Length: 328
Image (cartoon, rainbow, N blue to C red; front, side):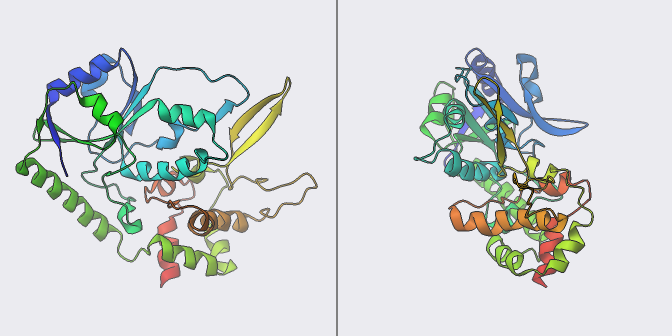
């Protein structure tokens, strides 16, 4: 991999100068955790690098919880999103397949994608439920972002992925990366992959998981759904779940509202029929959608191993434990 080496001071100065033309969101850590914040000049020094992972999935920047889809598209300031983990970058591939489809392009999504510079952050270390490598995703990006960033030995190291990323950094004083820095980055990558491998022994890959989910008996879903409270946290926090409602409003307005297959009434129709009335059926539906149905329809994988659904679950349901149980 080819890198650009930049002094941290020069990088911070460039981010500060970019605030005149862009809105900057970046990953910030504090005593409460880690998430994206709107960055002002005084916040640049607080930006977190190479630490997994922001609580909010990347999809939230492109698919708002609610929006009026019959209103005009506003020309907002271009955005920079800094510190995106690769699990979210991989999730964005599936969203692009859905919302940038040539026959049914979502113009709102497209506008946001075109006006956003995405800077991915290599993960040095893991959180408890990270399992991207089990689904064949590396803890660092090589595509679909514009840049990737690593902060090592008091230097900022950038990999340019897209022409837009190259344009963004061309004015920053930099030198090409050397073997010493490349080796140091590779060492961090390998160490993180080793942590992921050790933490997820026995977890089946996404393809095998799809087969296990399809063939699992009703008793499995009834057993594990008993703790589900149908809050929808798992789908809301997922980087690839994007079900929505279109709500008609007076004056021929249509509001697109995020929905979730775990909500009671998700599949209820006007006649009152509801194929997912039973909690265990709704619970099973999510895993069928993610590991079987979307796998058959799209090129991109619908679970990228971020582990947020496990972390967000009020009922303390761990999907990985379910899949390892099925794999025995």
